[in-house]
Image (tube, rainbow, N blue to C red; front, side, top):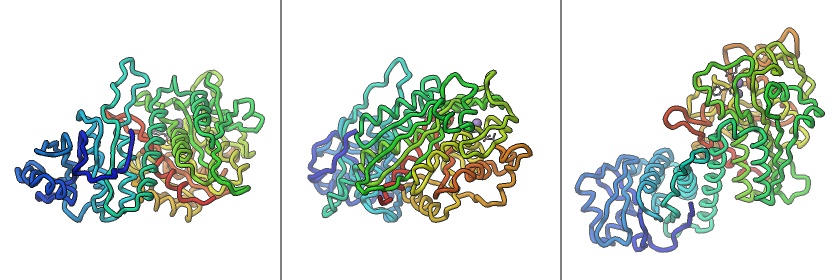
Length: 495
Ligand code: BES
Ligand code: MN
Ligand code: ZN
């Protein structure tokens, strides 16, 4: 999708579709009023029919006489003065979907001009581009009949008179970059496990680096990981014919000498059968999404490179396939991690932490300013938060607070769970330094406790995205979360 700010008056602009907000009780938004005036009362006449509810997200196409636009989409915005960020997101989604269903090749959106109780216009501009990209995303890579290309090719946004154009242009660029990053993450997530293997993730990361001069990708194979002592990571791929990969993507945007990077570590289990601790069959197909943490790292770095942020970032992806076989790791096996700590693998289905712990030790070499790992780590996170909220755990409350604030700002929600020492003893093992499971209770917390044993050398936060990374049921598919959160976090950092 192409985005631009409108430079002329929207009422006079000839377009396939003009998108205009209306409040409840037949009240016209300022933009609807302006259009109404230019059309000699046409909009008021239409609204007077009573067919326009004004409820947030209700849409109606109308064809007012004399309009420069071929069609006008009226979008409900709720009660005047009550519209907030969440309502805005809802109505933007509804509006974009309606326009996409129409025959319009281009559209003018005036929605970013709506007054929001809790946000500035720049935020509204960013969100509109981000959400429009998300609505326009369609998956067809593994369908024999490709979906027809979208009719809608470009969206122009009107902004209030007197608004700072430069700031709004930046806001638009941000939304488009986040949208692009989310689409990249969604596509990787949606690909099946027989296509999106660890090697596929590695070549995707390598291809990405060839598209952006600021990105450099390095891929470690199993032999190289063995040399580093990554016995924990390698125990996960032991049962699979697919070779594990440690993918390191470096983004250099800082011009300051010796500027330390912000590090993202993604869980990249390209399929999680559970291994010898085999999962039950129902919905096991969804374990192709077990690399969505990795996908969010690639999506975030795509956005960061698009934006040209002036910081350094390293994305590390621990990619492996978790399979049962004659060479697979067995319950009770003990492995030695890169950190030297020995791990008793009591359940081979708790494999995410096993690949992450070695990646988390590996990133010590970067002397990171912060490390955030992103993982579809526990079913318990789904039980706790459903598909709305990612779990956040961190021993660094300042970092946790920062992420909590950004999640409220971006509407990419996270909520904190405790990571208190009292939970650590659940991981005690009679035979190794640590067990890889902590029993049936507090599963999201004990998983983070496990990771915390490997993150002592830097400031660290863990995001369990098991509930938010993809949707199940009829809408089954990757969501591209938490790319908005991660991009905004990085955007706010200094070199
Ligand atoms: N990838 C799963 C977590 C998961 C399960 C995400 C369902 C989304 C939906 C992870 O590898 C796993 O199997 N975790 C186990 C851990 C347990 C064995 C301690 C779980 O949560 O059941
Ligand atoms: Mn598992
Ligand atoms: Zn898993």
